[in-house]
Figure 1 (cartoon, rainbow, N blue to C red):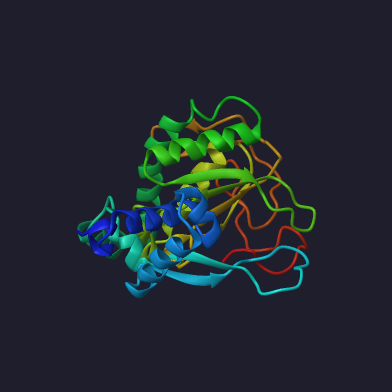
Figure 2 (tube, rainbow, N blue to C red; figure 1 turned 90 degrees about the vertical axis):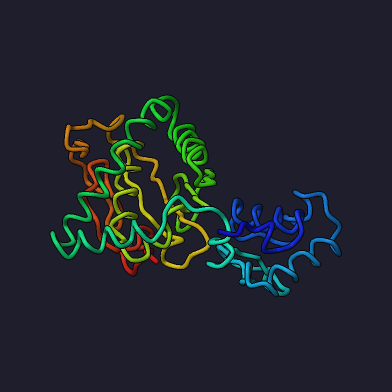
Amino acid sequence: MKNVQSVSGAPTRGQVARLILELGPSTAATLGSRLGLTPAAIRRHLDNLIAEGLIETRTARTYGNRGRGRPAKVFVITDAGRSAFEHAYDDLATNALRFLAEAAGPDAIAEFARRQLADLERRYAPAVAQGDLAARVQALAEALSADGYAASAGPAPAIGGAGGEQLCQHHCPVAHVAAEFPQLCEAETEAFGRLLGTPVQRLATIAHGDGICTTHVTGTTHVTGPDMTNTGKAKGSAAVVPEGFFDAAGEGRATTDITSGSGGLLI
């Protein structure tokens, strides 16, 4: 598979594409500043990447009242751009899961996904066991980045008074597989809830066409970590969980807006 550098024909252009992949939706000013490029130079690289279909422009999301002037324009990686980077999967994985679904039903896919995530939970658990919630979410982001997910963490945007942390994954090695089998995303979200011991909600996924995978982590902790069984499932204490979230036991899913109690935040 070609990589972005060979597709774009210039090392710097490849760096621009990778930075957009890692940062998620980014302005030209941010990209130019991070790479030490002049406004004219970064615009030239961005225009070439757009012409090659590796990135596209979108209007930046705003929270609260926006001031006067044009909405900010951000650059995001496209499916073609993401595919230009190496992925840790191939058509064999999709075909195998299709066969499993046909032979054993969709529940078998969910069970398979949970067992795949069991190893991740065991490896990540020591790293996310210490510190306050913000520190543990940051540790989880660092662990995910080491596995190729280009993750970041920080305070969640204050929407309707709801606080917490936000975990972003700017790259997904199995995005194309997860697009057909969302059980992979669901199992990952459940694993995050168990690892962090608090309700989490997946707000966006690369598999569903969003620029990044975004997970909201609430500030209420229920358990300290996963209690793994020999089946790969984790056991957690029961808790009252806002609708739309996964609790520490991976339960309590719905699609109600956490801020107003109506409407869905899930994309």
